Image (cartoon, rainbow, N blue to C red; front, side, top):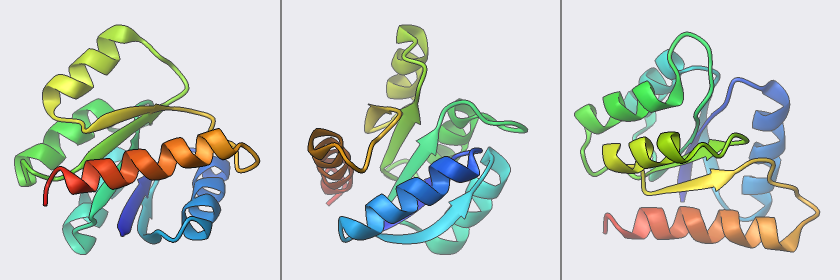
Length: 127
């Protein structure tokens, strides 16, 4: 499965890239803000986008909205350390497939399973 990874933290991106590749996913693009994410999305047409909520220039909520304008069926999984119910509701209303809490630890089997299952379920909803 081809994944676009979007987070403004280089540490988080590198960590998630390693985790995703170890789980058998292919990271086809990486971006640090919403503008880069949109360009990467249009270039790579990923099977699923893993999108951070809080980023500079264009946040994940706005980016989600724009991705859905480009492709209403695009599976997007939101990712955030902040679990604000209003933000979660807004993302789900905009069409996010799911919402994952950071951090995702590579030493936690539960985190790895949750990440893998969430991405697979998000992509499967489109098929």
